[in-house]
Image (tube, rainbow, N blue to C red; front, side, top):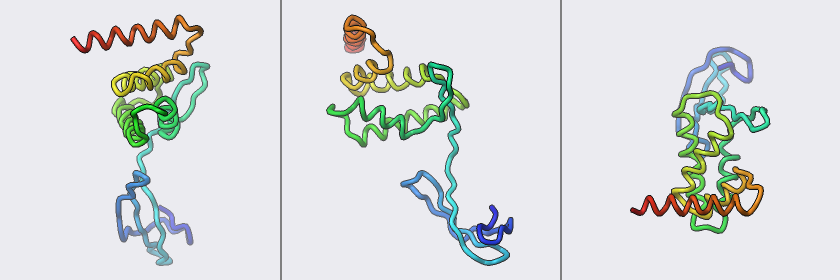
Length: 155
């Protein structure tokens, strides 16, 4: 880590702490040449690319995932804290896959599987956007399939 003041390449760490709100480690450093102190943050780099339906690539961002989940869960029994927790679990699952790229379709399926277990209304809302239903029949078929799946699970 180069010193931001004199560009000397060596520094020592004087203090390390968890920066929970940023999901990072905060390091206090001191330059070995000019003796000035500065702070760095160490975070996990989840360099994951999402391949969109039109072939473009976009960086995966937890914030965008949480916004989509929050929109689907609005006015349901699912709290915003539960939405953030679900988003974090999905991001952790993606890291566990150890891939550099995922299709929007695969990501959507992962999200739908999790939402289906959490809240039926949120699942249907997300499915409407994700699956791009063209008419009421497609929506009704999705609801019928969901109801059938729930009956099977209850048996």
